[in-house]
Length: 90
Image 1 (cartoon, helix red, strand yellow):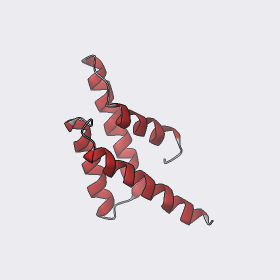
Image 2: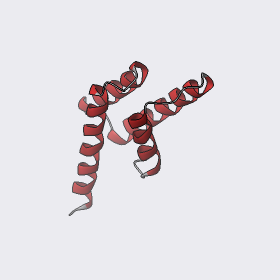
Image 3: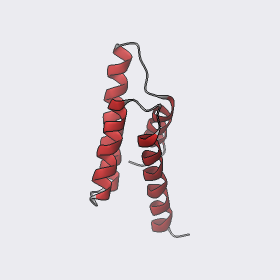
Image 4: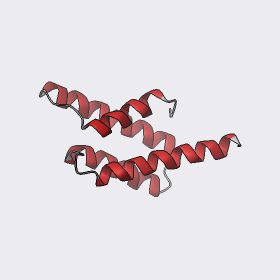
């Protein structure tokens, strides 16, 4: 499989996860807003890597804000954040 095709499959998988989390009842509204912003930007053909970095930054800031209030990201959004911040999407 070519490198470009592999990258495209990874991008499609990440976008599919974002869609699923947008629809997930356990996703908090503030998390959903970040995910919708990501989805819309990617659908508008904006740079995928840049949008992924913005999503990670937004989720990181949201997690810090929630931590200050003794809360956490929803479990699946937390997993997504860990995956995009550690898998080399940047």
